[in-house]
Length: 441
Ligand SMILES: C[S@@+](CC[C@H](N)C(=O)[O-])C[C@H]1O[C@@H](n2cnc3c(N)ncnc32)[C@H](O)[C@@H]1O
Image (cartoon, rainbow, N blue to C red; front, side):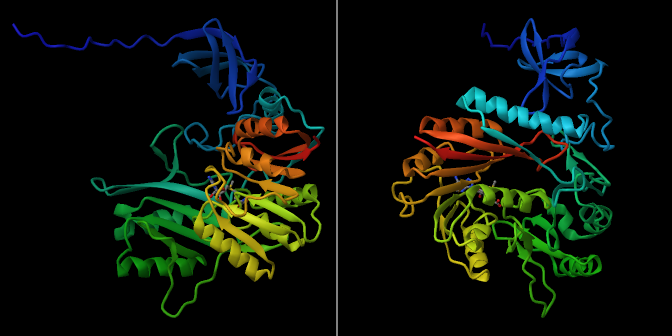
């Protein structure tokens, strides 16, 4: 008789709940750390020195069930969507404690992975802790059966959408668009294929719609009416084409601009934009102070975007060679240089590939500024040390990759002079940090 393989029925193990546990720390993702007989567990929502009840989840995590003894630093989250929305995961932690925690995380990671401590910590650079975001990406869903439209933010670790009426970390000029958009969009044919909506508040207010194809003439007219009523620009990002502004007949496009240190720079929706509008110029000014540029000095800038640091450096008279991985942003950077009447050499290159064929990769730069994405500069940093610049200013949005890359600098004779946490993402666990390395060997 033929025998068939039948998988055994899998009965899920009962989730293990642990009796009261003390939280001994907070990790770099803002999760409480608990040492259990089964090993270390990370518990989202728990704070240091708290006593909690928790349920084990997978190999390394645990779910917070109750806080039996709260920490003095615990506070009631201000946002009504806090429990569901995946955005601001540190609202339950007092603001001062968040900032101290962020500095401690950078300090510990630098110590652990690079055996480095800064000679001096500058006090965290801070500005508004609420209503600070100038960019808000909204998820949306059209339920054709129920003819229902949902616009909001993604739930934590889920594809579900939390329909929000407000977002307390976003600029009010953006959140006041939520209700009018919720009325307008379901009236348009394009709602069926709307991917997401992005709201930007720089020197202009902009709504970007992500679509598969260009909308119908009717939809275009309604969007133009909306743009006029709300005094904003509508941009369409269709398929693989670059985003384009929607213009009425005879209307000329107003190029969007954002403020860097002492200069207003052109950009395009889709370009990288630092999240905190007020802190960005302050961060650029601090980097300039550390760089202490002299006219004619050769500076290499890596991960340059549309010129946020490049233009302020060039305006101080430095000869800046700026490298960026997105070609259209290099174009924008060069246009910004032209508009400011300064000369900048801008190149499009993938900095994580070997540099041997790049003409700009030569010695002669006295200073390097780099501002990579969260992945850090694993390869680029090994190339930077070959160029032997005297000073390296590293702007980081991920302290773990900063610490990894700092170890390479330390191994090549660089000391860490100063460091400063930039409170770019208050109420969240994300950490931005500025560091100044000097070659002493
Ligand atoms: C954190 S953003 C900083 C941009 C700019 N410095 C600013 O302040 O607006 C990082 C930039 O690195 C670029 N980038 C990411 N990976 C890259 C790579 N492998 N090679 C070159 N550029 C890269 C991104 O396109 C982005 O513009």
